[in-house]
Image 1 (cartoon, chains in turn yellow, purple, cyan, brown):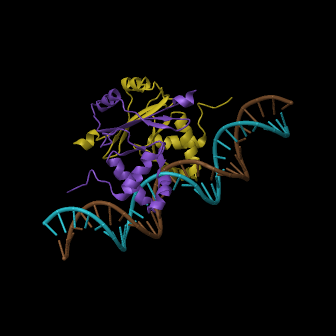
Image 2 (tube, chains in turn purple, yellow, blue, green):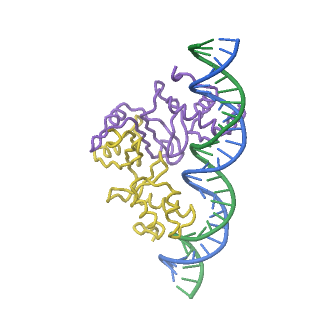
Image 3 (cartoon, rainbow over the protein chains, first blue to last red):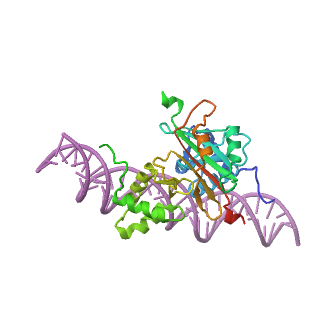
Length: 132
Length: 132
DNA sequence: TTACGCTTTGTTATAATATAACATTTTTAA
DNA sequence: TTAAAAATGTTATATTATAACAAAGCGTAA
């Protein structure tokens, strides 16, 4: 077997669980502090789990915040096409799953005809609550 | 006057110049090392200049790389709508200026009707050279 | 079974990225 | 001309991330 693609190690499960429970994106070191009681003691353990979970599409990294969210898209096993809306005020992050948008972007070609196998889009604005 | 919107301070000019000359995105600390002979000695000086240049739309931050590129779009004085293509192999970054794309994204509304005033899009793939 | 390779894990140390806090200088505008 | 504001300089430190290597666990084939 070259790779176990559907099995999570203990550390990976622990990290995934805490990200899934969170309502906001979590930072790597805040994850570290939260999981220290469960035996994860050092940054590399957290970062390894994060890297793996990202590759599996279980979580995504919000690049503009260096923070991590669970993928809301149940069927997402790869993470090559992501879009988020981010509130400038309360920092709430929502994953956008809009078939038209993803189709548009997956098919996008620039002037040179270059095609892409991956993209990440981050929208910023005020969420409904903060707009009031 | 509340803000000088079209004037760059000495440090800002120095930092902008080095980013404009570069062919690849530059990291903050590599900028710092390059400008130390010009009297910029400490990180905050670089980061302040970067922040200002970003606000003015003179440069953009490539979030997935923590690196900075000059805006190629001459008329760009604000930086609320950015799109880049990034080569996974050689790390080359190109700013995409595609009117259809920017129009599409500027007008994008999610399911709830929310509109955004800013976005950043990063495409990944292989550039023409690396595809060969 | 055992021993080999591979993956995961643990651990220490350190690299890389970014900002806080405050002193000083320069610029602005009353 | 001088007080306020903005920009700059400086030191220290916070935050984010990885290198490097040792040890443990696990599958598998001899």
